[in-house]
Length: 159
Length: 159
Length: 159
Image (tube, rainbow over all chains, first blue to last red; front, side, top):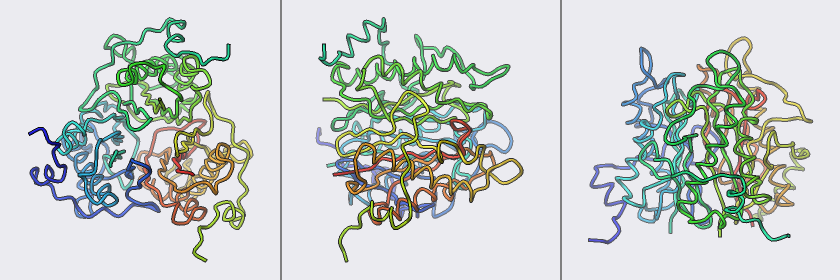
């Protein structure tokens, strides 16, 4: 009733269990704190250590469908929250989602990046409510690590 | 004579009227404040709700010319300033343009991204003077939302 | 013996002399300080004013080999440190490498961006030790300024 919603409670209500933090794909760490901000590494949509799909997003044979890619963006955002929690202890400390950058491996004719990255944005709104409203850039790139169709990074403010 | 130039005055002198903040293309907001920083969403060169051109930048038939793309980068930067003012109230509060990232939808053979994004950088210099000097990355991407040739995001410091 | 390692001493031990800051490729500056953070511009692997190679990274004729690109990412990171030192005076003031974004101009079939950007990440670990552990995004893009195979930008925390 007017009290801020607990992000951890919302995760539970949504039936989301944050995974183990995926091992970084290189010589870096999943998330770093500086001042009142957490920067996460770019996250791929790993599920139990594997990518659910590889390839570029677009319409046509051999491409990843946009609707599927939206779900992968949601999974990448969940992994980014796991990365953030690994340095914060609890997502209840998050006071604002500041910035999302979403990279979509895109067929040259595909321009629906916003709809794909909405998979991440909507998840953040579900978990954080008004504090989940963020600035965002969505771009279509040539290729992503390991062939991932999407990559999502976050900047979060916390107390 | 030595007093800081007012960014709002400079905009007026330049004949620039900031537009209504373009509606975000997805489930996010145009700009977010954290501490003394404003992060804008990636902005497209909307003019009265429409993109002036779509496609990739390069030389040849069917491509967007570099000079045109530079103008679009300028428009995207104006839209980013509108986004920033929507959360700051006045651009006179801006003390420094910290960072610009410019994405250019690029034909594979086009490597003139710096010249394109100079459209944004020069506008920021015109508006903010010395405080407009920023760090910047310019990259050529496969595709951008709605087919936009350019996308520009800003990090601004304010008081 | 337990005291923090001096980044400047480490550079010397590694035999690295930071170059003159490469001139920006456009209307911007090499690095900007805001609060306790330094944002560098995206850096190319300039050596004495020239790029050691141009083109996209991948396997096959006419492409830049991944191992070579990794070395170029290292050089770009060295240039980014030069940019940071130009505003900090000394890299001994750096308390944490917060974020690295690495752009790799990629052939559509190349998905080894993490291995390439490890060239930057490993250099930062060598110079800063534990304080060099950073969040990172690595993405494959269509083209980079001047045809560079890689571009690296940093966010550093300092005192």
